[in-house]
Amino acid sequence: MANISSILDKSFEGKEFAELADAPVSALQGVSEADSAALKSALGISTIRDLATNKFVLWAQAINNLAPKK
Image (cartoon, rainbow, N blue to C red; front, side, top):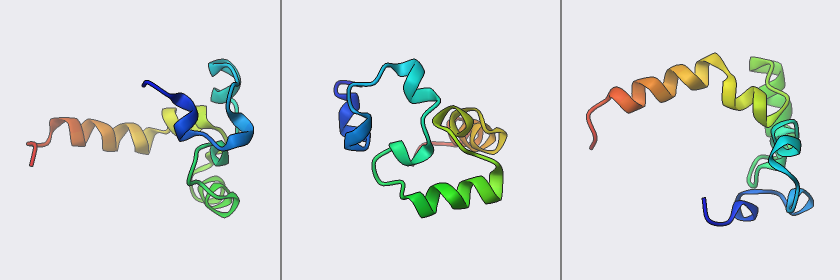
């Protein structure tokens, strides 16, 4: 990833990866506070680390990786 700041909310640019992993999902550019609250309510996801390690996300990634490419 060439420029990590291009995927982060401005207030999280320049943070260390360890800090970003524990940042709220809304630290990702395009994820609103409302989106973040919905993820928390529906799937118990509060942080970027939670999102990255969520079993449903991992299952979806596995299916996608094994599916024939379009």
